[in-house]
Length: 113
Length: 117
Image (cartoon, rainbow over all chains, first blue to last red; front, side, top):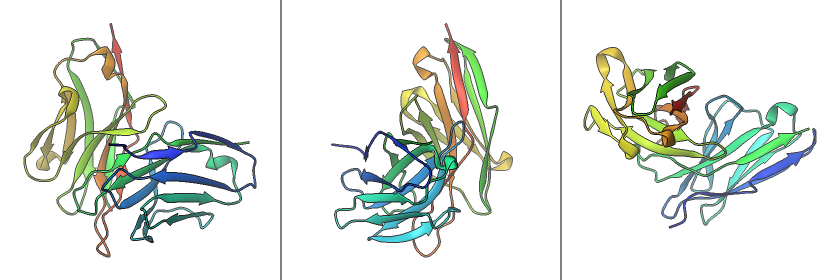
């Protein structure tokens, strides 16, 4: 049973560029969340998708956007990249129940130069 | 607003010694609490979760945590540390549900555990 898979594993971009990160949830999960983890910090919530809609959003600018597809997979898009966007981006999936834990992928390491 | 505070950004123990990683939470409602572990260059793996069923929660790899409402704490312990326990540990609280959706996780800043031979 495959867990949460993310691609690519590493990415290097230049300031001002745009990037798309991809995530496939664990089998049986229909809720996908994205987190940003800066070096030496805990993960920070970006947004959550359920039924192809953004259900919750953290304190991130509109440059961060996402999408969920009918097969529950998801994309995170970041426009106009800044140096401060360099981080590990983690995708997590879960079932919709309130106490369902999040299952995380191994993340995409984004470096903005 | 809910929050989590992890006391001690670095903890070092000897192999075989007790591991104690501290977590205090702030929540206006009964919380759902989690401990995750992160090994280098990997994502987060769930160690255990508290969802109000029992105050002492047992997790994987010999870890356990005790929910103490009076102290608003959820400390993580393991009786005997192994070298393989060296990693970063994150405590998290689930935010309040709103709009019927599942609340997101609010993480502490993490505690890096080192295990000396």
